[in-house]
Length: 435
Image (tube, rainbow, N blue to C red; front, side, top):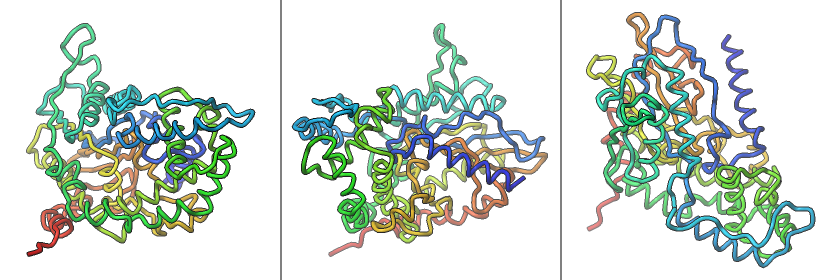
């Protein structure tokens, strides 16, 4: 049975990757990887679900201010070109994105999270059948418009038609919003860590492999092909990267296809090259197992998860659902903190072909609306826990299987890390005092 489950998991991973012929890193629309399966396998038939404890990334959003500017620069560049015959792409092209919308949630993002909420409601109907109360269903968000909007969107799916307002029986929710940066150690902990900002986020030395890959043979081959398709010269890496990102936005927002628009400029292999480029950057800044600061700073979020789960076991809370809205960096870092990152061979500028089937893939780990949630069960006096990553059961390193994991085993594995968090965070994050 366990072997069959492994085969099924492997098939799912392969299907996710091959269905889109190369994904789009953290710009991947959630619909590319979502799991519509509603059947739930309990640890044992008699088990009763007691809490869902969730963290999710905000949904599909408009480009950031920086990317909005880059799209305008791309427009200026490619509109001097000429499209090769037979290509389903038209010039002139003008960016549809405006600065006033920067980083805001899109309709696609609303639908992603609404759908996730709907599926959770259908998977665990007994847990969420009671009317909403801030006491029993707790929503938290980082201090960003897109995450607050996302918290509302997932709640709309969870409580659709169960409220008391209007003909649509709308249910408003309360959202606990975290402090502004740099004081949010829970949901934007990477911005609350001065040493991370100085030594990782702001230093080119951290992403040297990413910078080398930009000048490598794989990227140069993509450059050559795209320049030929547009009868252009001197496309920069940023120009090419924005064509790749533009393809993702066309698919996610504008009902595009892989054969039209920006996507027509990139072949399957080209998209894979730019997915790898993005993974190179994220591997060294958000999940480098050789550099603990890139993931262990998530320990306050770990501690909050463990504390709120333990309160249920100790009968100290009425909470049946906790939903936290955060960002891709937090989700990616937690993937490693939970011991799920099995990428033992580091990504480098010179091992792209070797790692085509790599474990660390941000398209799968942290697409738009990425999520993970723990399901806590009481099973005839015993407590069990399961972990879902992007709505699929995954095996934690401390557990015998993904289906049946004792809560005490889970706590024994992660509790020391959580208990020492204040000391760990300060050790990792404090800059030396200079007189």
